[in-house]
Amino acid sequence: MLYPSPNAVNVVDDVVSQARRAYDLGVRQVWLAQQFNYHAIALAGLVGAAVPGLGVGTSVVHINPRHPLIVASLAQTAQAAAHGNFSLGLGLGAHEPERLAFGTAWPNTIQRLREHLAILRSVFDDGAVDFHGEELSANPGWPVTVAGGTPVPVYVAAMGPKALQVTGELADGTLPYLAGPRTIAEFIEPTIAKAAADAGRPKPRIIVAVPVLVSDDVDAANAFAAQQLSFYETIPSYQKVIAREGVASAADLAAIGPAESVVRQLKRYMEARATEVVLSPLNRADAAVAEEIWAVAASL
Image (cartoon, rainbow, N blue to C red; front, side, top):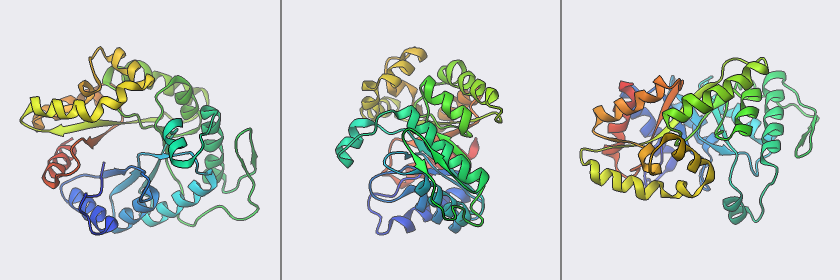
């Protein structure tokens, strides 16, 4: 995961510079989070154009309040810029943050996800769309394709059984965050794999984002991780993960310690049938820390 430096003079220049350095160190895939300032899909396209050969993706852009036609046009434009190296990661969102930010919230999350993905699939796979659902409709009457903009792999940050079912049926895989190895092996992988198989789709990818802190001071690192991740302990889906993993807190799901120890911890996810592991830095303010994490990522 790449994040703009807090003191960046220009966000695009800063992230492109980070991406180039990460690529030089051996990293071959980076992910960008959507926030309320820069647009992650646009930034991913710029990075992909500036660093040929580097995979770029969003982890994640929330489906609310974005209509899938707008997401499709952004994603295809980013894919054309990245010459086939862009991946679209979507999130379901959260009612309270959306209410605070936009003044409203969107109910029927799973149905909205299903219809959002159905419209994207139609645009990306068929080059046209005529869809009328319970939550969303799309019938523009104008072209919806971008030359050089497909195919676009679509992933969803799905954790619950209903979201995993829809994701397996209509997307290319899932992008879970803070899901431990046991959760991957015993719950996420079998659930999404069955949904994809039943729908006649290829085996889905499981791209796991893991909080990482490379440090020789393990006690201080654990304390910092506990502070940064305590929010997730209030969310029911993550409470279930913590219980399933048999750990005491969300911080216990982070990969913390010297580089060699972090690598061992991350390899447990691959053994649990994760397709790919994404390193999400807990300390985002230190450039030297970022380079350590890129080196770990490259070593994997």
